[in-house]
Image (cartoon, rainbow, N blue to C red; front, side, top):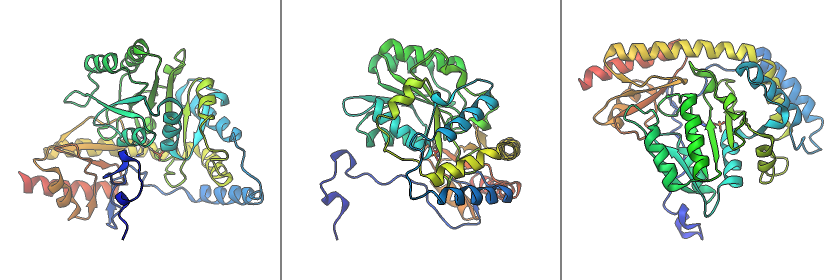
Amino acid sequence: MTHVDDLPLRDELRGQSAYGAPQLDVPVRLNTNENPYPLPEPLVARIAERVAEAARGLNRYPDRDAVELRTRLAEYLSRTTGHGVGTDQVWAANGSNEVIQQLLQAFGGPGRTAIGFEPSYSMHALISRGTGTGWISGPRNADFTIDLAAATREIAERRPHVVFVCSPNNPTGTAVAAETVAALYDAAQAARPSLVVVDEAYGEFSHRPSLLPLIEGRPNMVLTRTMSKAFGAAGLRLGYLAADPAVVEAVQLVRLPYHLSSVTQATALAALEYTDTLLGYVDQLKRERDRVVEALRATGYEVVDSDSNFVQFGRFADSHTAWQAILDHGVLVRDNGVPGWLRVSAGTPEENDAFLDAAATVHKAFD
Ligand code: PMP
């Protein structure tokens, strides 16, 4: 048996394990921030129709620049945020993870560094490492808000080439104020011309407006979004960014030709036709998220304010034991390795009830 470390692997990948939450077959799965609602049947039928149309042209490569899709995404962003963006300001790829990878390929890389304020979305660090970009773990306050003074100091000292700001932040659910993002941008530009990536994967679930208007007059700022959460289409693999048209040109230098298949483009276009229906589910999930926060607090848990479709709760002397105890009740939540805390995604009302029952029982057991 050949061990992976026996291969002529890059040094920085030795001893690493692949990223991913456990995919366990349990009744209630609230561990990966998925949307619990399957796509509505009329949309499923529309996808079949559009994919059939695409299939007739599968002998040809897809539209390399995905112009129709980018146009519809630009319209979606403009309509839902009130900030107008054009097709030339939007770029799409297979999930926002791929968007982030393309940004790091273009703006990071060997000899360059990226910073994020942790705990945050761990793929920012992993994709940085995967693209040979050095990773700097920046600080946060104890309440998981960004410590602007400490962050600014760190940026001034370390002079990173890429700055990640995740809002709402995964795994804590914390939204970042527009003034904080603007101040981080100024600090980053003062240190060196650098790219500021605002990861708004959960933007649609926030109590606050989108940070999209901040890209205006800030050519080195990028906002990333995904159809995995609000559109309930994690299986589709469609993420996108909005920025100055020059950033879109830059990622085109590193993207693989024809990276977005015709099938993906057709499916995403069908989903965008059903935006209003899908955003109706988002409203329902936001209400459920708020209910979960209140119920957990009433049970006696500490809960971090959430602007996302998940909730971080604790505190546990040993979060892994608590994770297992909740799993023993048939509910899978996420242990992100944030000491003392666990994260639960908002599910259907029935799933949330099952989780809240399990959480209440576990709380009693740990009291
Ligand atoms: N950003 C954040 C903050 C996330 O939590 C996730 C998914 N867990 C992503 C980006 C990537 O999502 P996708 O690749 O499915 O678009």
